[in-house]
Length: 144
Image 1 (tube, rainbow, N blue to C red):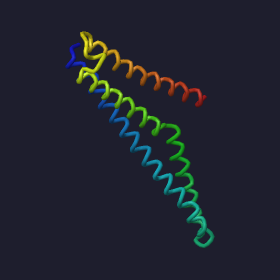
Image 2 (cartoon, rainbow, N blue to C red):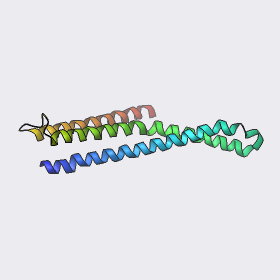
Image 3 (cartoon, rainbow, N blue to C red):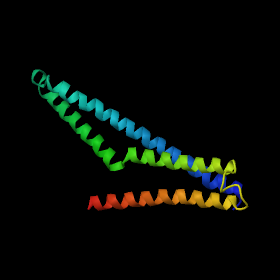
Image 4 (cartoon, rainbow, N blue to C red):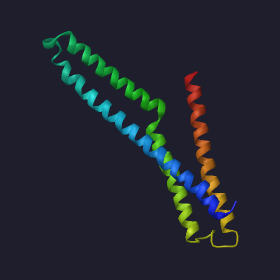
């Protein structure tokens, strides 16, 4: 595979994928946290009026409590915050290597600069895969 093809099909594609996943996890994390925050603030606020307004408000307070629990459960299960930061860090590491290679900073300034570049990019991606596998194995252990 030549440099241009590797850069386009492997490096740029992975950067784009990691950035997309980071953004998606960031949005999900922030949305679930905001919903949880608003619902948790409403519970004590509305609880003070439950006696005056009756069963319907009591049910509403219960539903809001359940919404908080569901949001927090989804955040723990999906690990959106951790995924967001990990994908962002990996994307930034790939971009950094790409700039080092483009500017021919050592070790990319020698005869086998492209070989070193490919090796370093693949190490970054392999580390990301190892982290993902470790996370999945830990999740499987806790589910059993």
